[in-house]
Image (cartoon, rainbow, N blue to C red; front, side, top):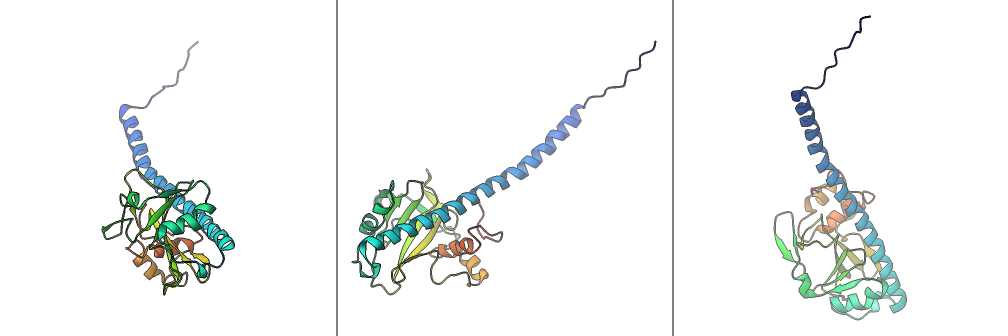
Amino acid sequence: MKHHYKNKKGFTLAEVLITLGIIGVVVALTIPALISNYRKSVVETRLKRSYSVLANAMLFAVKDNGESRNWASVNAKTFIDQYLVPYLPGSKTISEAMLGEMYVYDSTGAKRELNGGYASGLKLKTGELIRVVNGFDPTSDSGLVQIGFIIAQNKTNIYYYGKDYFTFYYDVNAEKLLLYHSAYSCQTSRDILIQRCGLYGHDSACTALIACNGWKIPKDYPIRF
């Protein structure tokens, strides 16, 4: 009886190397996109969560201390100690000296210390860092309190507008935390928002782009992650 055996042929070394090369290319193209998407999701989640937490804290501060338009003018540290810390359990104050070791870059490459403007800080128990600038003055022409926001403190203490650092504003007269400066809104030209997002003093344009897109970073967002 004759036995017939099929000719079993394995992969050649060249075929294996070509396959591994293709896999390497696919991985190289995929991993950066996955990392970028993850970083975006972190920003979206933390930005939305922190806005909600801060907005609620200010509501309780008004409830306990009366209308904010009647509050006395105080510096940033006093504002944080009196109107934020009691309503943000687990948070820790950050000194002006520590803020002086932190830097934020704008899209032009300009660098600034975060303790500018007599700022004081507060680190939330979830890791986000709040920066109050210029204190609280209910008689100011704008009626706004600038509240900077760092997504998460890192070891380098280097951050970027529209990527790591954003800005909220507390409206004293409306007694409401705003997502962005009154100069920007969901009705503002997208071209203007995109142009100014990431520039010094215009990081609230970045906040508007995200908040007005359902708390999702839009595809045409001008800053890469």
